[in-house]
Every structure is written in C-alpha cells, then in structure tokens.
Length: 265
Image 1 (cartoon, one colour):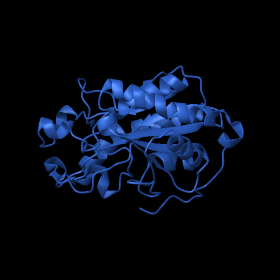
Image 2 (cartoon, one colour):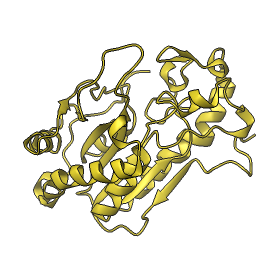
Image 3 (spheres, rainbow, N blue to C red):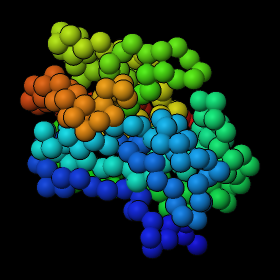
C-alpha cells in the first residue's frame, strides 16, 4: 500500500541536476503539500500556509543558492506536519500533534502503521536521493542545509537574528562563515535561536557528519525571504559570504566528527 496517489507531488525534487560544484544543497521543509489521502490534516488553509507546515521562503533560497554555486539541490516535497524529514522516524517530533500552539488533528492519535506509510512514501525517498547524490560526488564535498525561521513565534520571544548558523563539533564552515556574515553587517545567530542537535536533527548528522563532510545548517528569518525578491537578495548575501570558503579544498577534505554508533532511539 502506498500513501501517494497519481495526482500527488513526488516526495522530492532534484533542482539543477547538472550542477558541477562539489556542493549539495538540501531543503527538508521546502513544501507545505499534503497527500490527497490525508486531506488537510484537520487544518485550515491558513494553518497550512503558516510556518508550522513548512519553512517559508526556504525552497526559493535553496534554489537560488544552488544556482549561484552551480550545485544540485534536493528539495523535500511535503509538509513537515505529514512527516518531518529532519527528524528520526521514531522521534515524537516526526509528526507533531501540536505545533506552536496549533493542534494537528490528524496526528493526534497517529498509529505506527500510518506513520510507517508516511516514512516509506516521503522520508525514505528524500533521504535516499540525498545519499545517492552524495555517493556520486567527490569525497571533498560540502553539504548546505537550508531552513527558515519565523520572526514571531506564538510560544516564544521575537527573533532579531536575520540569519542563524546551526552546528555541532565541526566548525570548519560554520565559524569562518559566521565571521564573514557578521562582518557584512548581517545579524547572525551562533546556534541561536536553534542549534544543531545530534540525535534529534537528522539530515546534517546522517548525511554530512557521518561521512565527515564539511557542512552548515542555516536558518533565514522568514519575513526577509517570504517574497521572491527577498529570497534572491538573501541568497546572494549568503553565497557572497560562503563562496570563498568553498574554494579551500583542504577545509573540505572529509573529517569524522561523529563516530558510530548512531544516537540511541
């Protein structure tokens, strides 16, 4: 049995597949689509347009970054409320029943079999696409994970940062990139308001840290990047700071910062 029907979008899209740079851009929360079989998850159209359902502007940013770097991008195809592609499938946060004060009725009593359908249809193909792309790339490849954050969460303080870099253990790209962004006058958070949580975050630890790849996870503030023009502007500012760092082949040489085994379930 498959969750996705013939009229549903694919679980991921590959943008700029011919990109030749030793860089892979990924976007875990690029879309707010829901499979037809799941209806609207019990949410209103307004709820599904909000930040709880996807990272607003992140897809456009990821596409722009990929094109500016001549890199490929793998973009997740469904709402994080269906299945969060940046969480381990066993994590309770993989299909939240409540997000930033909003109930998600379809996830309230989600059974193991239904969750497994979502994982098989969306989570696994997306991550298989990332893994397959990386396996075909040079060993000295960088992974750039693009996210966005709301400026005004209901359950929290307003966020003054224009951008945030999330990292753990491996600071090869994060530290010099943070310095360059701040030198350019960009208000940049260093692991705030989010940090990279090994054992909770999935994409960067599993695909970059496990392979020893240089990487960075970046959050853009959504009010700055919600429009196409804003996404273009902030993608350009980000690549202006990042690009020169990717020319250092020694910095991109694989280095293990996270030995096996995987974090416990």
